[in-house]
Amino acid sequence: MAEKTANGPMDARRFAALADAYGGALHRWPPAEQAAAMLFADTEEGQAILARAGRLDAMLDRHRVEASGPALHRAIVARAATEVRQGRHRRFWWLGFGLAGVGLAGAVAGLALVTVVNPDMQPDHYVMDANATSFGDVGPDADPYEEDL
Image (cartoon, rainbow, N blue to C red; front, side, top):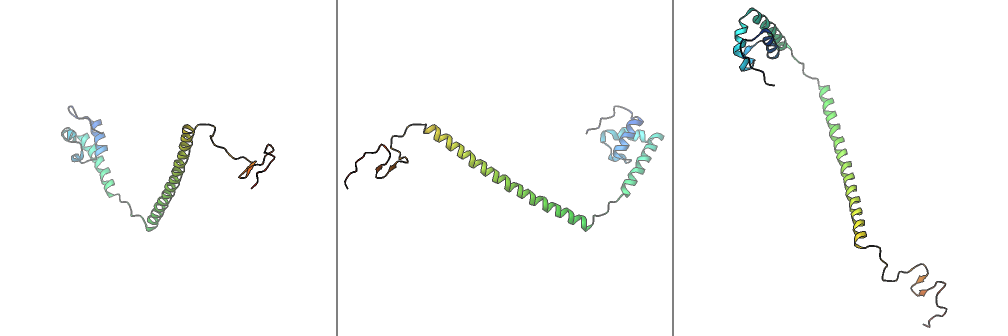
């Protein structure tokens, strides 16, 4: 976020806000604010604000974070391996669902194509029913005589 530039002498409130944000070293402050801050730092109030910010800087500089132990490292690696494995399983199942969806879409498209291209028309050829055999019709209305073979 861009800092607003000072349009004149800096007041104590702005100086304290900048000291809280950037610390007690004026060279870390935004370049547009440094000239006005140096003038205010010469005042008694400015020196008090910089001293407070300097104590906070020193306290933060002394703070150290201990290195993690091997147990934490193993736990992180195990969790990461589990996440990778679960991700692969999820991708496999989504691939299966996708292939099933493509197959279903193909079946629907084929059915639609057959319906549009080949509408319901009576066939022009004889379809054998349950009473027909390759030797002739054996239904109740069949011819009573047989051909001599």
